[in-house]
Every structure is written in C-alpha cells, then in structure tokens.
Amino acid sequence: MTNWNLAEGYRFAGVHCGIRPDPQRLDLALVVSDRPAAAAGVFTRNRVTAAPVRVCRERLPCADAVGVVVCSGNANACTGQRGLEDARRMTALAAEAVACRPEQMLVCSTGVIGRQLPMPEVEAGIRDAAQCLEPSSAAFNRAAHAILTTDTHIKVSTRTAILEGKEICLTGFAKGAAMIGPNLATMLAFVLTDAAVAPDDLFALAGRAAEQSFNCVSVEGHTSTNDSLLFFANGDGPRLQGDALARFEDVATAVCTDLARAIAADAEGASHLVTLRVEGLRTDQEARQISKTIAESALVKTAIFGADPNWGRIVSAAGYAGVPFEEEQLSFWLGDMLLYHAGTPQAFDAATASAYLKANRDIEIRLLFTLGSGRCTFWTCDLGYEYVKLNAEYTT
Image (cartoon, rainbow, N blue to C red; front, top):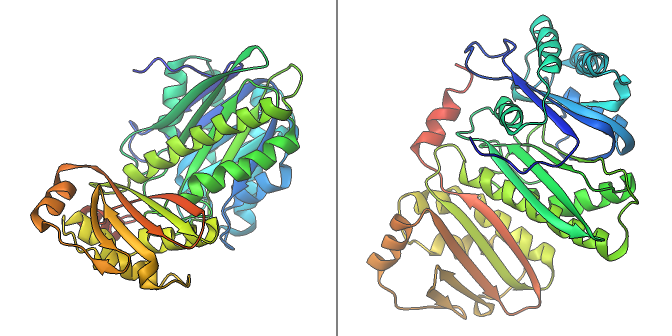
C-alpha cells in the first residue's frame, strides 16, 4: 500500500454497507476535517441532476464545512422527493456521528440511475464509517476504494508547495472510468488542503481548475447526473492572497489535471490514453471545441484502438466541429510524424505510424492552425470491444 502524503487535519473511512452485493466491495466513504473548512464545488451541467448534487449546491460555498459522505453503486439520481430526503438524511446521520450540524456535511453518490437507496444499509454504514475514521494512509486508501464503480484502480494525486514560508499539501482523489463527458467529466473528485483559503476564492479557483482539467477529458461525451468536484481548505492561519493564492491555484490545477488524465487512462476497456494538443486558433474556446469533437468521434477512437493511422478521420472531425478555417490553415502530427501540412498530405510510412499506435499506451495527436494563439490540451481514449461489453451489461 502506498504511504500517501496527506493534507493535515483530515480523517478518512471506507466501509462495505450493503449497497453492493459483494462484501469485498467497499461502497461508502466518509471524509471529515478536524476543524471547520472552507468548501466549494463544481458540478455537472446536465439538466437532470442527482439529489446529492442539489444538496451540495444549496450549501456551497461555505466557510465551516466539516466533511462529505459518499456512496457508490447507487447514483440516487432520478429518484424524486424521496431521493432528496435520503441525501439530506445521509448528511444528518454523518453530522450526528461526528458532532456537527447537518448543513456542515456534504454528500455525493455514484452508480446506477433511477434506483432508491437502501437506506437501512446506508444508515448503518455511515455509523460504522464514523467509528473507523483515521488520519492514516490505510484509511485514506479505503475511502478512495469506496467511491469506485467500474474503475480498475484508485486515482490519487498529492502535491506540496511552500507558500508564504509554510509547506502546504493538497491531496486529491477521484473516480471515473465511463459516462465521462465535459462539464463535468461519471466522475467524483475531492481535493483536500491544509492551506487557508477564503470560500469565495476557493469557489473561483475550483471553477478555473475544472475548466483546464476535468472539462478537458472525454470518454464518450456523456455528461453524467452526478458529476461533482469538491474542494476543502481547513488551514487556520491567514488566508492566502495575491501571488501565494495564484501559486496555490496552479498546484490545485495540477492535482485536478493528474486526476483527469487518470480518468481518461482508466476508461472502460481502453488501451490508449490520447493527448490532443490543438493550437493556433483564434480563441481557447475554438481550440476546445475542435479538441472535444475529435475526442468524441467514434471513428477516431476505433481507428486508434485498431492501430489504424487513418488520419483523415481526425482532420475531418476538426472540419465539422463548427469552427471556421480553411484546409491550408491546418497541419497535423501523430506523435512526431507530420502527416498533413498546410492542407497537403505528406508522405509517411503507414507501418511505422501503425507501430507507434500499437507500441505506446500514451499517444499524442497535435493539430496546428495559423489563426491565432488559442490552444487547448484535451484527453480521451480509444474505444474497444470491452467498453461495449461492459456498458451493454451494466445493469443486467
């Protein structure tokens, strides 16, 4: 087990409560700050939102959050008034167990949509988790496992920085392997820090960090009902300002980027992590629009899975993205191989290009335009047989 470098002042627990039939699968996590923390969140832009998302939106940003309770295996989405009451009940039980107000607890869930939570099991799990809270790497590891669904492994990023003469730590963990589409990317992510950050500042930087990370990852373009990114900052010193706050945001964005890349790399059945670099557009938004269109093309993704250097699929996807340009304004590289320059195809060895795709799990695609300084780095994956099988049989 990894000995994680954890942000100070947090305790963790992960238990099996019975949402999942397999007793070896942890399905409920509890994270608690030892002192009230500033908290902020970024959530799905889907018009259909899970009950926990609604509860968190009502309570954030805030200056005195204590923690979050998370269940996996059941999304508590499309569950009506009962689902909303169950989500609030989860926060009330967690608050009672750790001696705080219900409004100081947040709630997240992930799993199958349209099923009511088995609340007797969830209630018992919350009480059990509260008895297991520890500030250890082992406890953190159990919490990180308890939020997973079809993920093959936990996703963790921890970074430190010296700000105003003091070392601070940011610890992030996430889940996500499919139903991944920008705004947000089904994903849950939590970033905990022992730095002191004002709630409004935390809210602002969380949105910007998400825009450069989780909103730049797509598996199949499906924006989920439950997507949530929560930030907690429990530092008790003077709140970061100015240059120190800007440097903190850089580190927070790096943590989110690590987690976003890990989500794309762990996509169900994926054999490639694809980094798309699109540069030279009029604006960053134009670059993002082209990146997203390419990333979500089934034809592009299946070609990569099959190690087929059919680069015409990539160029044509850029062409239908809705961004105006002329062919002569585009050049394209696969890895370090220039395949298309200023609107003209270049001679290349197809076997070498195919071998690049076969031999490398991490591959890079670069499109360079001549229209300006707008750019975007975006992450996706290939699309193979296992993805179809897993999602065809997800609830049966």
